[in-house]
Length: 241
Image (cartoon, rainbow, N blue to C red; front, top):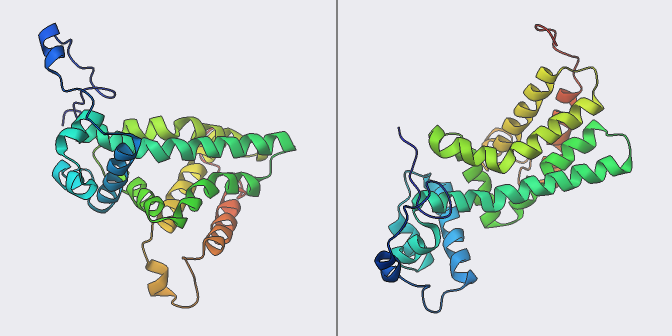
């Protein structure tokens, strides 16, 4: 399946326009501003989270944001360009916040596993406080079910730098584990938090009144304890380290 083509800011660079074509290109929409652009992104985030990339149309986005499709194309170039902007808007912010928290821990002294885990989890957990934030968490979980040509580049751009930094941090705090173990355990942490944070409502069914997944502090405590224990488990003796 070929990669989605995006004209404009992201994706495939646009063909060079003739002077006549440039003169005929629509100008900046009258009365538009950053609020309109944000409204489009917010509406898209909810729809993409609910229906996925393929299941969402620009007509639905336009109706939800109360704008024209032409305006969406003006700002984002295509549906794929819009999807990129929606994902990277929060994804990069999460990554930056993780790096900031990790840098602060490194300034304070020797790294502790439990603190590294919390620094990784908290930026995403904080999104659960808003409807749009919860939508992004679901969108992030759905990204792994999207075709590779849609998902891989976005995931790498948003998270590769911070994820690699956390792998290195865990290896500093846990010098006995191998590079292989560190990568496996970080990926398993990512899988666990995506499931726990993405409102599957499984715990409400399994343990009603016992577990409270709407309580972010309870979620953080349980997830931190679980991941910390996994990170601190003995090295896995499979092959060369």
